[in-house]
Length: 423
Ligand code: CA
Image (cartoon, helix red, strand yellow):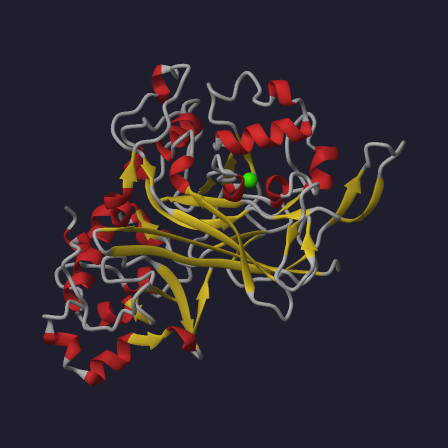
């Protein structure tokens, strides 16, 4: 067991029941306190840990990290040091904040230098994202979309069970949770219209996804095997791949999504390390037909992460519309990465790869409005009496995720963003 994952450890920082951030989580993020520059952080309970300040005060034991790596506006340089450093760092934090350890616990002056209340700081986009790839790896989602957009009898295209399908997205419009965005405009064509028209999307949607960030680069020509993929995957976040369905339906043939997807995507601020998620590995679905040898894998490579989506209408309470789970994914991350690099495509630290919409078998587990309302034919009744076929102006969509076993809950926090009226 990774030392910091020990479920027996308690912290001297209060962690409320149901908190996503017990001492066993220790994710990494970037925070900014008022009047200060951005820094690398972790979190326990409701307290932000200034890792740069711990380092400056010699509190990280034997770990040697240059000042500028931690006084930084992104995690890229820290990730690039290698997993052994981030693993040592989580273990050092676990020791420092262990209820038994008096060094910080009993030193108020030092404590005040390194801890911030979460309400007093701003959380920034944790990673400087180089390239962004989005997969399409939920068999339920691909089947639902194929049924609605094409042909119910042949919902899955012939390649789907052989290739982890994906496309290259755009990194410029990926923003951290809390960043609102404008309803996109574009070309659409109603099925009965002769010609396309231009205007704000009438079918704004979310996609419930998880994303992993690359922590180790490769050279062009190199491939990452399913076995080695864990070394390259630094950690995971929640990801909302905002989508405009009417724009998508008209533009996607033959090269796939373009403007229907690249106007905004929202990422949660904490990178939960693959190390912290180790206790929550589970077996994935059986893959039939058998995959090609480079996509075969050993062991449990899916993760049991409970996922929820809420819509918060203006002046209304957040209302849960979906409960899904990351473990439903047909293609796992190791296979996605092996496929992505099998042709020699090089990857860089900070590249982001998203899972694709995470839907399950049950209609309440569908990870998009497109599926939940079956393209608007089964509207969702909201508690304020209104109904939703897609996302309205000024709706906020909130996604949450957490793993739980042995009395330990490792959470992802949330990813939220509001859809503002078209600009
Ligand atoms: Ca997507």
